Length: 67
Image 1: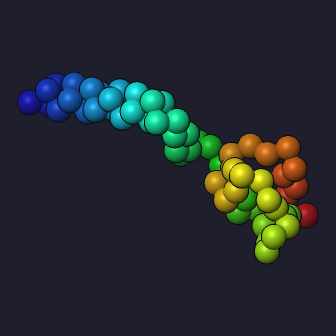
Image 2 (image 1 turned 90 degrees about the vertical axis):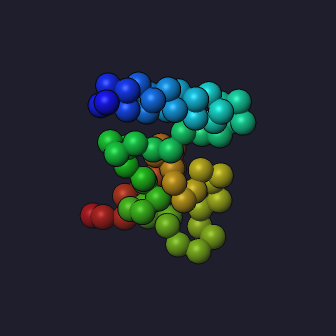
């Protein structure tokens, strides 16, 4: 029963990945990717106008707010 469940889960994951690609959606960050906006120096008001905001995992303008 577990083998069937794993096969169905893998099939559904591939299906949703293909649908996301077809619809042009970007994949959600996985647990090992850090959201930079939460700790960025420019995380206030209208200081950052990047389209990736507020879930950027990479950004050329990123500056850590921590010293």
